[in-house]
Image (tube, rainbow, N blue to C red; front, side, top):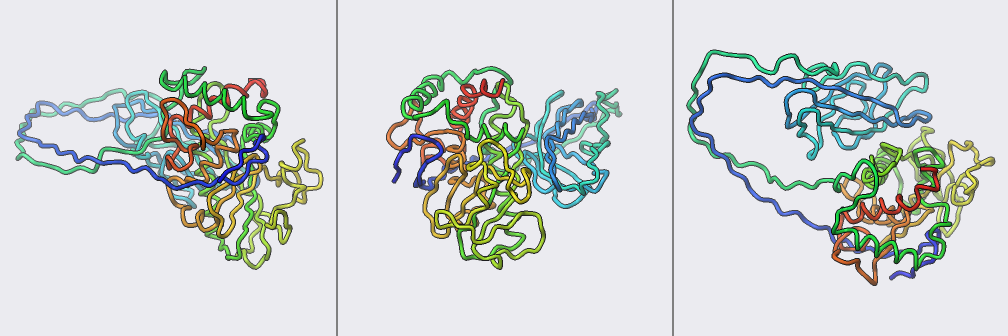
Length: 433
């Protein structure tokens, strides 16, 4: 059930069915017979790495790593480095790496392991540091070879001719169908696929005709990111009687960051979007009883029994929803401890709700799905934070299944991605871009 509001600020509860699309897999077989080898070419490895810190805050930072393959094509890669000042990774995206260690080996994700000559893979991470210095690593190795930024001097070595006869073999390989992120957007301008032009125009016209203050509203997720110059702060409203361990707290934070990043990834490099990544920082937890939170560290601010809408909240004096001027003179921790949105987790809550204030869903649902690749209700509600509409009573031409049409897709689709980019196209001038 949904009552459609006139302003993104007051979006009500939205029921969201869970219809997760499956992917079919197909088996592949290969056979190898007699092979005659006259000379052996050795793969030459060479690479260039660009490391940049995109944001930094007390105890943490966000960074982007860009790996360019200067040698022969590779089908997988591992990139190793050591942080010089004891920094560690706390979460990573578009690659895999251990957390909590200063000696890092990052490996490719399932969709970015193939690198042709001069091809690039980019990944990002959030990390921790000791607040005294955060120097960049100086040495990187790809597949065991130092990245010097120069191409290899030789790509082959001659050996005496040899002939090897191998018996025919048949090898079963894993399914070749993989789930990939939405199509990579163009690096500049507005150039959606031809088949999406009409439905995108229909969506924007529908929003213009049904939103009461489409262009005047100033607290979309876009506004929050630009006010912070590239990050967002969250408060967790723990609207439940259950206890939370430090480990569960950290897993909730990481799950929120991963899902938020899925939307930001479709903006990276598109049409003047200035941020390679948008770190998510959880700055506070709100509960009815302090004993529910089973940790004693000071990594987040704790707000106890501050009740609004019959649920705990972080202090209003620290919330952007209540202080859209961007000033927080009465926030106990100062402006750096303000929160832009709330992740409102309510015991027994069905469906979801979303808007400029944040996202709401069942606490059991979120906790049980915190390690899922796609937390579908959260992804849908974050879409509303950036202005995206619901599609309960109509469907754009040629479209059937996308995450903003509740219950039709479990993940962000290309159509969702281009709807988000269309919002940026129409709003970017308010930020002087």
